Length: 408
Image (cartoon, rainbow, N blue to C red; front, side, top):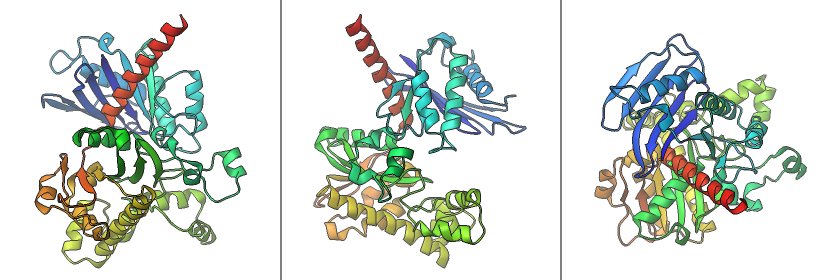
């Protein structure tokens, strides 16, 4: 089965083409700068051949058409025709409480996505644009939505409820939902495979560390807590997001004359490592470079970043009553031995020790980076959210066939 995975943003469309018989990536890339005078398309084939062009497109329909043109291009394409595409998987950020697994897109599912627009105003609307563009480009081809929030819906009420009047939850859906669920699920499953056991047999703390950061406490395959909340703003210190703060800070910013829109922008786009480090960059590599050069603000930002992660590891270790592994993924989690070293050196109370050589060797590749005598394994596990989405498409369509056969 050949599956196209799409991740539509407000000004971009990421894509990956899979042949699922061997879970092989055939091609991937992105159309970026949609809406600008010069959009850009980056196309990469499985064998390393790549091409970068500037297609004359303005919207998601045009972006997907330009992607299709590359996929069937006689010289660099990977498909004979667009009829080879048997299904399309869509990353959708927010599915609320109603979306707990990948689902075949219908009018009802579209309504669920639209109902969550207020909860993810920057993500769900362009996700919907991508879905509708795909439906027009591939008429009759099944589309499946895979939600970032779905994996976290196993959390108990004491984890997902906020201590505010209960009617705010029942009337307006004010609660913790969690995000990066596809990534947390993928690395959990991959970790189980590495350890030659089942996902349901493990207690894991998964750390997705990138420009956006989140953690999850996973008890025998089910999330019991996660750091992100009603939106992706809560939790860890991130590239430009503040993470946990006193809600009264928002009130104070309003008293100082900032509008809700300005406050939203400040907390989401001007805070985190960018706001604290003062080096005009949120890139962890730049933060580390400035730290090693003696920049006090950068050092403070890095300490805040590490401290928040260690604090949540401690909390989740207690909630899980111990853990089998702490798993690092995401751009920082996979590639920064420096950050992993700093985190590990703060976990001595749990008798968790880093194998320095293994840590340095695990640059963007899977590996156990703790010493054999550690109480809990430290593991680097590269994530693959696109493959997880493609797997969700396959399982959803298989289940649909079983259901149709049972009712026929």
